[in-house]
Image (tube, rainbow over all chains, first blue to last red; front, side, top):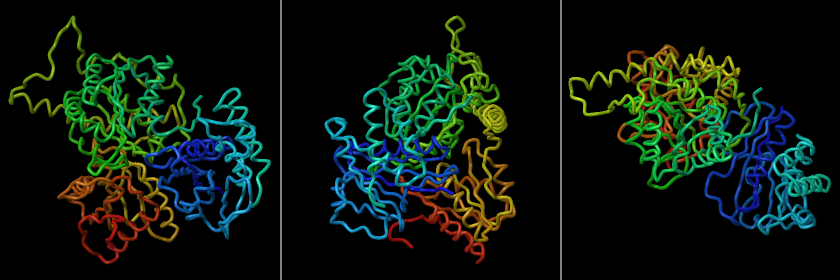
Length: 185
Length: 395
């Protein structure tokens, strides 16, 4: 039985809601059911924002917000200065951090901590949106690997049906690089 | 073949309106409804939907435009929310009392002050007496299915009343989930030809008539009585429309209510809207622990499902009613209605208030509610004033 709850932490403009939607769409490609839930409020560029998702092998009936996630993905590690990103995360849950380094001043004990340099990947690929490195597609690629519930191919398929041409190719490449370069766990 | 896409509740509304081949759309943006009419605007702009999109300066005018369109026999659609609905209110009543068949999606949102953009059902329920059929949806699939069925229902000659489909702000409107989108040809077969309606009357320059004019007391009551007859007929038409819809999509809606494990239950909770799913999970959880509980979801609030309620609630030990609304000086609006419907049936009815202004309603909340009902039944105590779920500072 699969029933996983996700929480995404990022800043307004980093595409946390899109990441949540891509995640659900990718899982749906392999026959899983999902819900993509935005933060219910006013989102502002640069401010800490959240999005949520649920993935299950049966239709999901509950509509409440996510309080005890199985998986947390952090788009901007600086956010940890103001947000407790492991809040409610289940014991042995997955904590995915966008970071060039595995060395952190924060101690996360009792969780499976993964690292992916999503920002570095975006800069390397020249993948920017409105002047900011695009990290959300890389995060979803990394989540495919970290959770193991849907394959990278599903993510690539969703990306190519969401963005056409060069943008689609770069985002697919970002997801691929994140998948193969994921560390930790 | 039907295809499944991951849609927000708002996009489910827009796809349903497109599949229903609405001919006139008039709306004014308001959070959290806006993405419904934005998406419809895209459909019109791209040519995927052949409709007249009437831009207006207010919700009051939006409904006026829809009434005008419906008066010519056209298939009209609008959507609004909260303050938009209140600003539209005068014309909402005009549409209901004037028997104008049209469909409106209402994304339920609390009325201010204090300012809120989150869910609460008072906006819709303030219009329960306006002659509109009122549905509440549990998930995005039901949202899409209800909008389509609503056109068949409202244009049925036995009904000819407008229909409101209520969906919870953000919880459905902005949350995406898989939604099966029926084949256009199936919906074309399911619904009457758009614009073919000639009842209850059609405005025609070659055959002029007046409508809604000054009516003296000796005729007025009969016009009201006609609306009530339509509402009564709607009970059967809604079930027929839901059955036929099931034949083409495999998703049957053949009752005004959904009975979830109420059959052998001692305790039944009555509820509407998106949080019914969480309540069903609570029922399953408590059933595994040996509690005989069930959920009775009202799909319609108007017409009110008296018969189903009386049949399902008879012989139970305790009934709970969960209201995401409040009538100051009374309590929950549905609690009032359920109590009235069950008059003469000996069963205690306890009201619960929760989820106001978007306060989250969780599985744990429903477990708590059911356990209170079980405890009250076991101790044989009389119902109390409504219990506010999760109220800060109150045990």
